[in-house]
Image 1: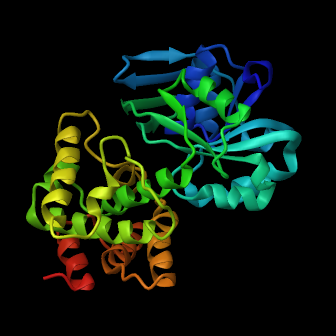
Image 2: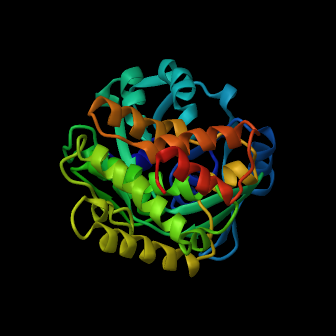
Length: 343
């Protein structure tokens, strides 16, 4: 399969989709960026997409259009927030050409939702973890680079997966994996910690510097690890973050603290000091993907008899922040500890 010979549509032109679209367009691929924000689409068409950050400050000429203007779709890359996946795929499915397919470049387990709508044979999964933020219409900040892993749902290495690897290698280092679910569940272990620290309006390193922030992060990821191991035989590293460091055992405290300490120092040295979840809550005042991550951990934990009190407490606190019922205060950590029964 040669993706240079066919149009590619990226649905969702925010931090991930916009970055992918800009660099693939620069590499000569026929890419159209699709979004629901008129000001963003207009800015990209009139001025190009500006990306600042670790690769400098450059503006990339791109082609963009509104979601309502999409007709037929072939090779499609879905980059919307996880809680918008169901509504997005409802629009995509009837427009997907017979030889079309959907690649999910998202957080969570969106591949299951996509496959239910268009078929597993027309669904490709991916692990994506590079740091980027949508700042304003026409502007994205790239915070760090991480390898993308492309995977078929059944673990096979196909020409389609290899073609996607070749295309996305112009964006980030990209590999094909036979263990897609190990990456996706490994990232949920990471996500458990990420949602926990995002309940406070402070840089991640500062939160992990505190004994309570560290302890709750260990507990959240420890719960998620136990759930993840019921879903995947082997969990893969999430960049420098090792989800297997949260396996239960006599050395749990030392090993998990070391893993979180390594993440803390990497973020301390980075221009990206907060999780994207923090930006959703603090800057954009919008819903997060908590129902696609923390809620899934809690639900799968209940199905398998695994208690997840910290993740359940984080889920409640995030919902209350989203609803404007509480602020992003340090006291949220104390409340989470109390709800989870941690002294």
